[in-house]
Image 1 (cartoon, rainbow, N blue to C red):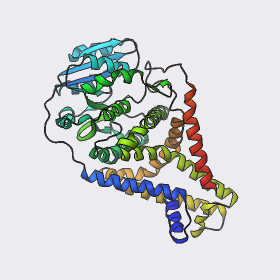
Image 2 (cartoon, rainbow, N blue to C red):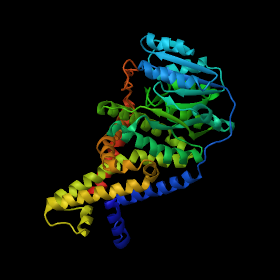
Image 3 (cartoon, rainbow, N blue to C red):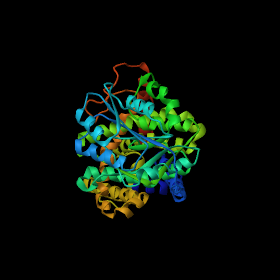
Image 4 (cartoon, rainbow, N blue to C red):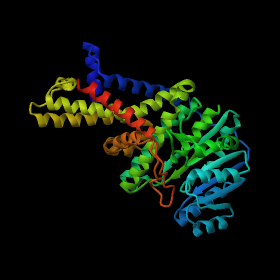
Length: 441
């Protein structure tokens, strides 16, 4: 934020162009548009009485957790509940299904997509709700979730999602903050336009006809010659949008989910999400540019941010090492003459201004949970120190398939390779090189 303000001052007063300032102006403009759309968001209130089948793919879960998951779902009386156990036999899960009185099937083929197929084939209702096996429903999750289907143009709906007991650790607080930001800003804004780009799969409802029509592609479509198992929720959202339906967010339908308590598992989860998000963005970009331009801009910036930031950091490092370059704008500040003292004060100022920026942009969350303001510097360090390199790596490797990452006995990835996987490496290298070159001039 500090660099942005100083560059904008020079740009305004002296006509000096700064690529970082230009890019961040675009980011802020997008935030203003998003905030305008958020003000227009309203959840659906009138009831929908269509039939509902709930499909729960599961590999393994703790017994008490899965019992609670089934109890909360069956209490809301969907027309059908189907559990698809995939991978090794799990007699504990089978027994829990029998006790809960739900339909279940076991398949030795690991993978969530195949489990979804089996569940959809066994479903009989108009609406199919896909539920992650560790997702906890609240009292009115289902009845609120299906309300938007009163509109025949709506093809997919997702819920408001929060983290269970976020006070347990810094990682769970950070994860809950991310969920809050998505539910307070991104999803309601895109919902107003009827184009939520990714309906998060912890609990997600589709018209059954859409799932039936896209199932063959869902199970076989490749990206750059490679079949990729991850990001099933974003893929199904893509198919729904391309079929001409709206995808929306229902804020009155609330679910809870867990977050990793260990850093290693969190990194694996974020890496999986980064690969899934970015390969789907690349695959959908042509369609989005034609049919959903706001969505195209949103995801294009999402891809570009890590490259722009890394190039900016490289430019600043070059300037401090050589005493040349555009970061001389910091000479406008009343910094101490000694290098280390000046650099230390500069870093503190930059972090402080960035914290103010984040607090302003995500004020809705901090109004809801003010104590998180004290953790904001840590959240920013996690975003920069962990998410930035993970998103870069996720882009470069987005055409590689791999195991699910956070579950034992889950889909292990295919061993086939395609020479086309070099394309994201080439694109990423070009973007990174361009960002660095612009910032070290």
